[in-house]
Length: 275
Image 1 (cartoon, helix red, strand yellow):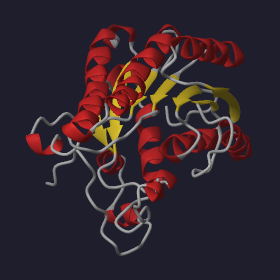
Image 2 (spheres, helix red, strand yellow):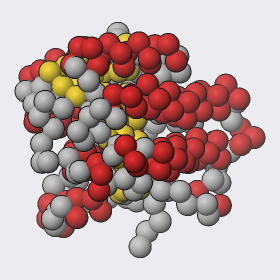
Image 3 (cartoon, one colour):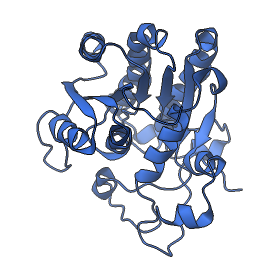
């Protein structure tokens, strides 16, 4: 399988950034894409809504269903998944992209921020997975792809970001568990994480510029490579975007095309130990 044509993807948090990029890459194949995110109305600081992305999906050659969903709300997730399956006749792929970030020492992390990260990152991932699993079991090539890092318990990855690291590693633990639970059903469950920094509109809000960053396209191309693999042969993996593309034959020259400032070496992302 080399295309997502006529496959249905349910993407959480897909109104901007990496989620949007994955949606548009799938749309280029002629996929059906469900954009399940909170942003139904324009954000004061960040571009993109579920409706603007839906229009982009249609323009790119796919079919879109924008659904306003707060992944913290179980009933909203369940209703959105049911509506998506009814609209497109099933669900083939779940992309757990929705995530919240707050980088601070434990003593400086308000519990409301801790709760937000765990409600979105962990509970939201499990809720979306639970709701989609019955449909994924009926897909000829069912996939769950969660944007979470490989688990590395060295203390350096916790220092200064304990709560955030806990939440992202909990997402990764969900990948481990679901991969084994769904292996006999031929539903693939994998994680994908950027090897280097990715620049998005949210990056600018955090005061980060494009220097040392790659575009979101590297993540969308890597996601496409994973999601078109046979689900029975590709599960329980923690992929880095660059590594999966090299497996597909990408060279240093190919990877350089993702650099936002050509000639500026990309910086290694969080949770990735340099070789």
